[in-house]
Image 1 (spheres, rainbow, N blue to C red):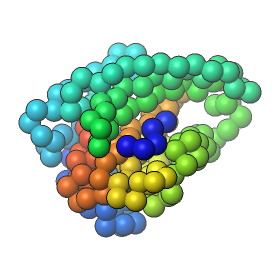
Image 2: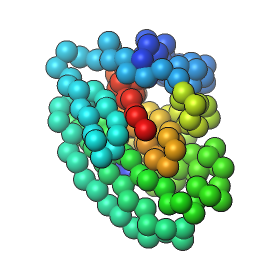
Image 3: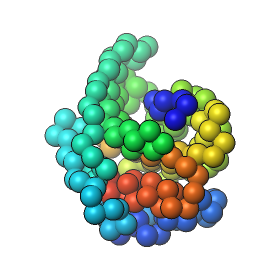
Image 4: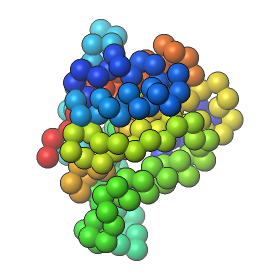
Length: 193
């Protein structure tokens, strides 16, 4: 891909993400449940991160990396878990937000700012960006296109669980089959506190 990229029982409901706003609404309605990987290919494997405190299905063993930088409200350390297959990628990134940020900003604002930052970093053209909840936690479901990628799209879930921000992203061709696969990948994501 030209530009790099920064649950249970609902996967079948989100297969229609490519259809537009109603599909994002269905995705958000299903965010309370986690872990359904029924639509994923048989060769996908479970991955669990004790550092990131999540589990998900990936099409191979994800490459792990980390980075850290200072912000106005404290140090921000992130961990990335990614399988890049050239035309497609599947990624989960975690960041523990600084205490000062969580103290001064409401959770919905933190999730919105994280989603805006993701789109700004990717210089993405927003196709859909809808707020919701995943269980009791604030979230955003986003569909966007990176510059120069007229025939591909990215589907992302941004969710804040206590102090940990999760970015769950899949990118690939803008086809119904890939959109269904991306939705199933996001549906396989589960976290614990």
